[in-house]
Amino acid sequence: MSMSAGSGVTGRAASTVKVLVTGGAGVGKSCFLRAAQRGRSTLPGQPGVVGEVGYATLPSGVTVVLHVTPELRRWWWVWDHLALGACGAIVLVDATRLPVSYPALDYLDARDLPYLVAINRPLGGTRNRHEIRDALRVTTRVPVVTCDATEPDSVLAVLHHLTGPVLPPQHHAPRSRNPLTTTKGQLS
Image (cartoon, rainbow, N blue to C red; front, side, top):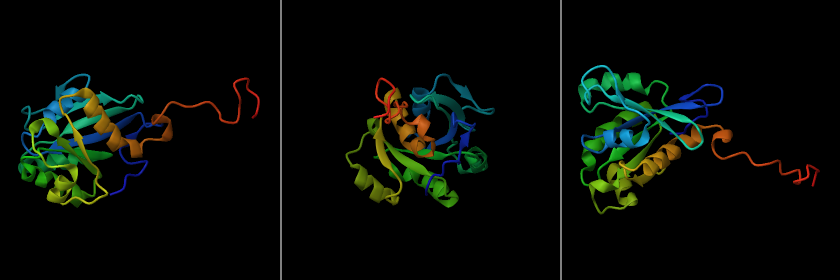
């Protein structure tokens, strides 16, 4: 699953990207959303059933539109709609209950949507990332990271890890001065 520079990126300067936040029941999806965003809103329908949406701003100024997927399979038609235009997904996992995240992984693999696995450490478990990768049966192309879904800095780091490959270079680091000039503006 490779990410292309055009997938899920809107606007000329790629100032907005769309990301799915998924995983099994009770893995911290709503906590992740609250930690990441500036405000909170819920899609029409029953809260927590149809899904939640929020916005996070990365240090680079890029806005990430976060869509929390509903948990029940009967709502997978909503997943199909939410996945349109997404640059990727974050699969939150509880290291003590990995099987609850299998359906999300199967869904993303079947649709070839890039994703990373984020182990929500406050939920417990002693397995390391390599053991969790093996237990989930994800390829080495899928990043497996750890996070605290209640800490904004941790959540933003996960979002940056996922979106970094799809953003143009101007959104990765501040522009440096031209290496061909000295501080006086003359060629070196």
